[in-house]
Image (cartoon, rainbow, N blue to C red; front, side, top):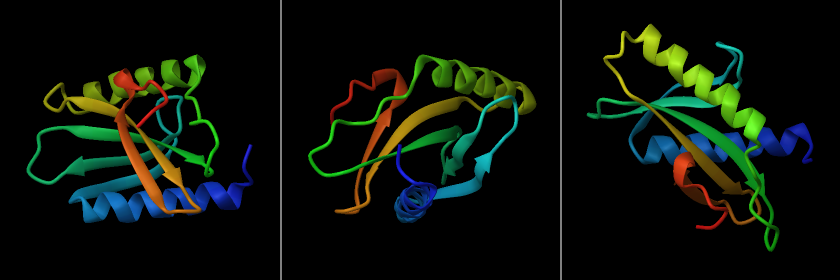
Length: 117
């Protein structure tokens, strides 16, 4: 497991990427609903809320996995966020894979996550 400093660096790179992609970052490390949501954001002009699970990986390493337990906690958080928004706003979950060495990013809808970009 990477040291906490690397995780913060990966999240900082992810936030810069999202802002450049015109996604408003609403919160970081949001610990509501029994799960930690690394980044919660909303694309400008879109009617959805996005949860971004940031995973850091190094060159030539396998892509990091999102565990079944973590997916379950995030799914519960999504249901709570949808309830909080009164079901007016769909919530989408993404894996945001960050290579801090190359500052490369791969954005994958978590439902389609297969470990490759």
